[in-house]
Image (cartoon, rainbow, N blue to C red):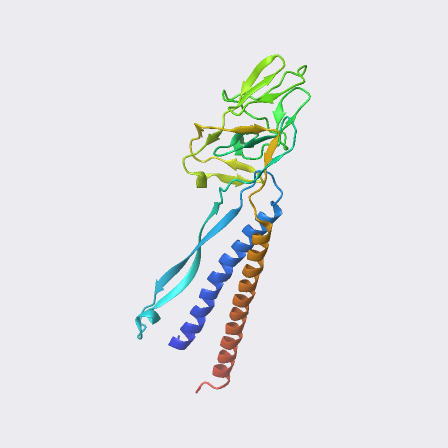
Length: 254
């Protein structure tokens, strides 16, 4: 393969690496926009970097001996707290500061910042998917069916007209980036959890998503534009190489 042909081919590979990460960025941004109204949702961000590849048997300036590919390093969540809004519902809880609620799912314990809970007929406090809320002792939170009032203090103490019924603990992990998102609001811990030392729970409020819809929409437009231009470059290089092959095939002396 000639040096010129290799350069053309490598240009395509470099552009394809860019298309790959842009496709992933579009998926992440679209998911953020889809959850802009999901309580407790945290926006995801993509971390990209350039990957330098040393070319062999290439003579020229120092910069000509390296090829720069784009690679997707990781996806992380923006931990910025969403705005707290008043709802007035007794089973709506918002976290002001650090921590997560723990709920019991069929796949195990999961964490969430979405504090929109409901009370079943048997008194069990559950999230929107029917997963029971867990108290500090690892038990499902159950309000006696005959009790009508519910008060939740900022320290997690839950009481009714008959007295204290449970205490909520907020939990977290040492590295929140190890939490694996599941669905729109659940997080699966992959490392040990620990209780939050200073917790603040607000009853009758919910934490909104921290997604900035305007910013995410602008980001999506820019990513789509970059994707289209890069894909156009790939098509142009493909056409150029095809034409070169046709000329060589038609006239071997070229």
